[in-house]
Length: 200
Image (cartoon, rainbow, N blue to C red; front, side, top):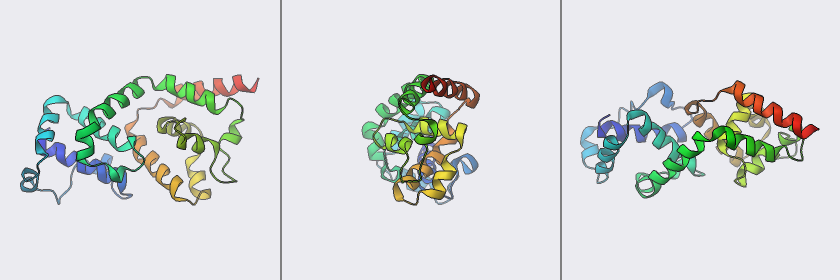
């Protein structure tokens, strides 16, 4: 990847995570409005040059993904933010992905500790328990996505929760999900075991 391509990848990732209609999996970093001339006018172009020397292409994609999903609002992720704290954010994300099964087991164990599965996903009276836990920082976005892949609850929430908070999280889940390599059968076994254990 060339530095200009790295820059386009950053912009395409931002479009992916902030715009309903843009799909990075479909369009990649093909943004017609971006020119090489405009890139060379940027003061931060040297950061993109250092990134392509440091990371393989796939790692560059993951680097930007990790930064766009880390905060509460992907719209507020700028290159200045990434230059300042992007490396740490990426390292933290890598550790999380490497221990995803362990994290999922611990987080779902906490979710179902005193509640039945229907109660955890009940949104008839507003924000369900799983969403409240996510907002408190107790349930990661990754666990939210894995549970949705198993149970398919997000579509139901979309229909019943008409508020800005959920809409923002729902969009982030949809945009982030394709970048996660989830073995649904593996996590289904973990979840089934936990639910059976807590029911005893």
